[in-house]
Length: 186
Image (tube, rainbow, N blue to C red; front, top):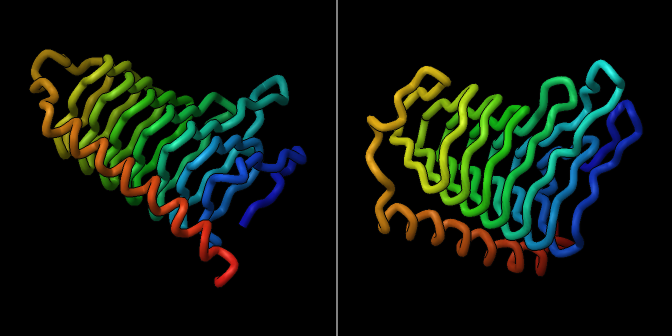
């Protein structure tokens, strides 16, 4: 469902993107080319800041927002998802938040008030809040990282981890064209 927010903003969706009919996109959202937005995802840009303004939620080209993902923002703050990034099933991205290009966010992870650098990997069931993760950083499953976390304790990302992230993007890019071809059937 594509709908306006109370301020009258309507999502802008590139014609090459696929948004599942069960997904809800509400408000000031920009979806770039060849993006896959899966079943039951909710992306909502509707809260205003103290000046009655809000930043758009931006989903970069060739990214995928998988089943049940929630993306929202506090008081109109920025949320941006870089190009070729995967946000896996049931994750929550809550602004303010910037996720770089080529990032993988694992199942059930939560990001809030943070920056995740390009090509980082956040594995399943992790929480990242109130901090900045550098480019290529690796967060293992079930980790909780905040401004007080010593980032040097975490292992370096391996080539195998990068290959997995890239394969998820490729798989979901193929789904875009497949679902676009049959979208009038449902």
